[in-house]
Image (tube, rainbow, N blue to C red; front, side, top):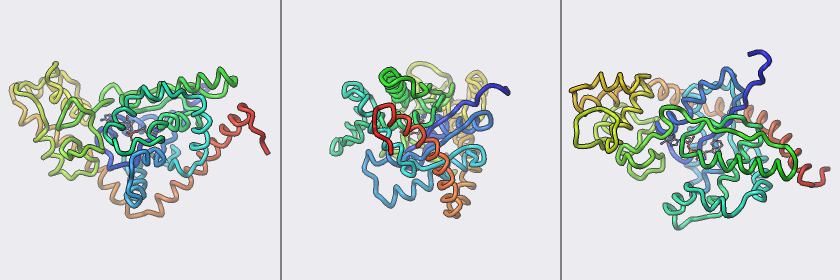
Amino acid sequence: MENEKKKRIFSGVQPSGILTIGNYLGAIKNWVDFQDENDCIFCVVDLHAITVHQVPADLRRRTYETLAIYLACGIDPAKSTIFVQSHVPAHAELAWVLGCSTMFGELSRMTQFKDKSARNAGNVNAGLFTYPVLMAADILLYGTDLVPVGKDQQQHIEIARDIAIRFNQTYSDTFVVPEGFFPKSGAKIMSLADPTKKMSKSDANQNGFISLLDDRDTVMRKFRRAVTDSETEVRRAPGKEGVGNLMTIYSCFTGKTDAEIEEEFRGLGYGEFKEAVGAAAADGLAPLQARFKELMADKSYLEGIMKEGAEHANHIARKTLSKVYRKVGFVGL
Ligand code: TYM
């Protein structure tokens, strides 16, 4: 539509492990579809990643890998801005200001903070606690309308909205109040080893997740071992979360509806179903993996993209930050 302003889209992934099909189906795959009609910015959020200890050499490598995965999944640098969070200092700077408009009580209620502090009891650092403030800064710096993420980020989007509204009320209208975008299918992919738990790239149990870089044999093996139930029928029902999760994954890779999937596997049992899900996932990942390999062989190409992205992001972010600094009463030079 000609006179309708393009929507600003912003999202990011932490380079804290090799991404899983959860990250892909819940987030990145949907980013690709936004690129033609909107103004998209996608970030590799390395500042967020160090809220959990990272081996420096691994973090460096994974930052390149995450960027390469964005590209391999179809994020096009000619259409979208792609950058690394630590290359744009305004994120950390705005986070400080927003932290002063965020209450201790509201951060204490974040379920992700509670989960992560339970899992990393020896390292419950201040960064882990203020994580959602930095995420709000990421989003609010760019006048973001829509944030495409998985369901686990919903609470973080809500606090970003609350922070924006509170700042606007205190200092006059400054920030666009963002909305989350959650895909109809794939917003919460569950672990293959425990379908009551979210699939996570930091899961110690390798059988719980499918990495985007798992080879075909590994993908097939993990799906064969996926936890289901003692019945044989492929359908979605309470107590059949494992099967429901496999149906979601199959649907995301093939575009088939639940009714079509039930029909396809009527009378066939879980063995054949799991083979089909594994094959669909492996087929879906193969082209992405081939492209990833090519991209990782050309670091200077990736660095060029980072650099160009950082320049563009810096330009927008600095403008927002100066406006914020003026509004709160900092003296400009
Ligand atoms: P992260 O790195 O944990 O995950 C990246 C994206 O993948 C989605 N996701 C899933 N979706 C479906 N099923 C799953 N099992 C699954 N696991 C992960 C996440 O919802 C997310 O969209 N805090 C964010 C990163 C972030 C960010 C931002 C996102 C920092 N700043 C600004 C959007 C906007 C995170 O930890 O994502």
